Structure formats: structure tokens, C-alpha cells
Image 1 (cartoon, rainbow, N blue to C red):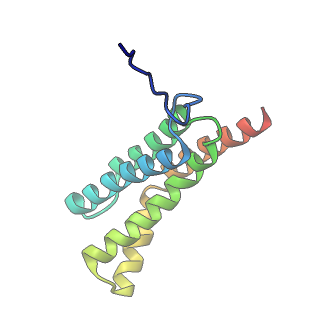
Image 2 (image 1 turned 180 degrees about the vertical axis):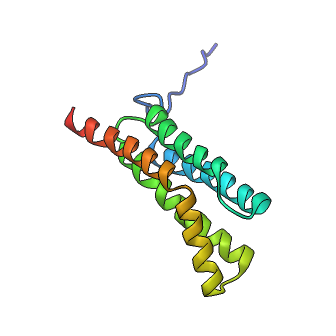
Length: 131
């Protein structure tokens, strides 16, 4: 009679939480869903996307592993700009005068929330480097 062998995973997970790519992907998806839905429904960016940006910053810091603080701070503004840029081109086409106004308006409408969430994430990044 043989006894069953237990196979261990090749890489042991050192700590619970999201890795750097996991944080970036989840933040991008949440911001993308909120932005695209709001652009399709309201034809502009507003409070739903602003709340999604704040949730991304807080959630990334809370659920990310140690060492993922930089990604938590850098991803939301970049993801928001890229998603809004691509979505506006798909919706409106590339008409420079209309596209420029829509893009600046989208950035301006979430600016306070984007600044506050980025400040919170960068604060946690610098605090973790000091420790």
C-alpha cells in the first residue's frame, strides 16, 4: 500500500495581499468601469469616477502587500488619464477642438478627488520607506 504524497506549491506566499501587478490591474479595472459607465450614461465624468479613484487609493494601500505602495500611488492618475483619453477617442472621434475640451473637463471634474487620493497614497509610500 502506498500513501498519498502531498505536493507543496513551488513558491510559498509570504504574506496575504495583492502583489504589485494585482494592485495595478484591479485599480485600472475599477477606474475603467466607473469612467466608461459614466461617460456612456452622463456623457461626462463626475462623482462616480471620483469615488472610484478614492476607493482605489484606499484599497490599494489597505490590500496591497508590503512594497506595493509605489504602485498604489502611481497607478490611479495614469490609469484615469489613459482610460479617459481612449474612451473619448472612441466616443467622439479625434476632433482636436472637441477632444481637448472634453479631456480637460474630465480631468478638471475629478481634480480634487484625484489630488486627495494621490496625496494619501504618496503619504503612505513615503511613510513605508521611512520604516
